[in-house]
Amino acid sequence: MSEIANRAAPAAARQEYAHGIPFGDAVRVWARIAALSFGGPAGQIAVMHRILVDEKRWIGEHRFLHALNYCMLLPGPEAQQLAVYIGWLLHRTAGGLVAGTLFVLPGFLAILGLSYIYAAFGNVTVVEGLFFGLKAAVLAVVVHAVFRIGGRALKNQLMIGIAAAAFIAIFFFRVPFPLIILAAGIIGYVGGRSGSPLFRIGGGHKAGTGPVLNDEDSVLGEEIPAHARPNLAWSLRVSAVFLALWLVPLALLIFFLGADNVFTQIGLFFSQMAVVTFGGAYAVLAYVAQEAVQHYGWLKPGEMLDGLGMAETTPGPLIMVVQFVGFMGAYRDPGSLNPMTAATLAAVLTTWVTFVPCFLWIFLGAPFIERLRNNVALTGAMSAITAAVVGVILNLAVWFGLHTLFAEVVTWRLGWFALDVPVLSSLVLPSLVLSVAAGLAIFRFRASIISTLLACAVAGLVWTIIAGI
Image (cartoon, rainbow, N blue to C red):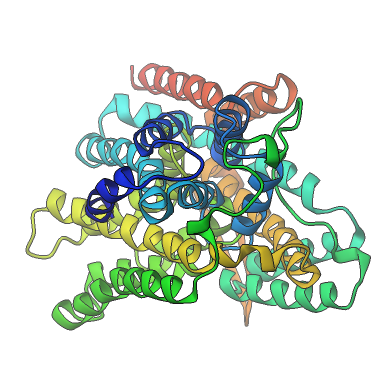
């Protein structure tokens, strides 16, 4: 993606846009946003809003929220897609490529570095202690996500019912996450199209507070820029390029390495995730953890929490945790390659197949975004999907809680029914204490996520050193 951006950037720099925003200025702004993109999608969107709307006044409030609503209808990280969308709106293809790539790059490099340390020194007391504390804090973070998203999405009994059904389906019957999202989307689409007020909820993040910048008062203005007007031929051409960038590497992996190779499995699995990751990273993590741990054997249960801790404390989308999953999968099954080399290649592959589709969705659909405005059927689908996501995240919280607080968990099965039951005697008391402390910090004292994670990491390190003495 970076090579495409490099080739497109000179042309963009030479082109004069009616809004008068230099391409070089936009690159510097997107780099600044990328460096500040901590705190999950809500924090990242707030940073973009503060800089692009409040500070630079490049884009108006209504257009910003309209773009965000469109991105929330898509699979994948909405904050990164919003950056691609606004970058494209300002400077067409080159702008979208630069904005989207820079948004991912700092997190990719940070998690790659942490993955090296984890793989090489994971059994060292210092690293072990830090991640022990992180696991306990991440549990509190996920529980907080359940309440935060649930409070926004579950506004009536129907939505609560959809969330409950999603939780029962994935927790007790192991129904695949994509099927749950598909079913919820169909229910919401039909309900929204019927005109039922129960489906007119819509998700979304609050963009900010204070005076509203009207579109006509922004630098971009109220009118659609000439380069952003719908052009089916352009959309099809650029979409074909990104479809090839996404699928051709997968075809080559299958042809040369076979379907059972770890690289092929990683590419195919995370390509599937790129299509079904509605609702953000938390929604899909339970399914990723289930498959990566139980089916592929890429990770141990506790390691998924370690990876989420990395993603929570580094800039960029939380879905970057899948990079760590791919890294560890290839590290443990490198074939003829050096384990670190294989792991690095797998991290790049995972990131590639996760984010290339995001560019595809935006470049294909953004020119026609106006046609989606006030579409009640799509609003209904998004409302139902968001409700289902709450149930899925609750499942993630329970799954993380079982594997964080207990050293042993057994599964009871009866036909399609399955239940994970902890062995009570295996309770890890320090994890319970840290999790409760993290919960109090976040819920009671409104501490930031990053400060809570760092404090628990230090506490975990201290405990590990004391326990080892």
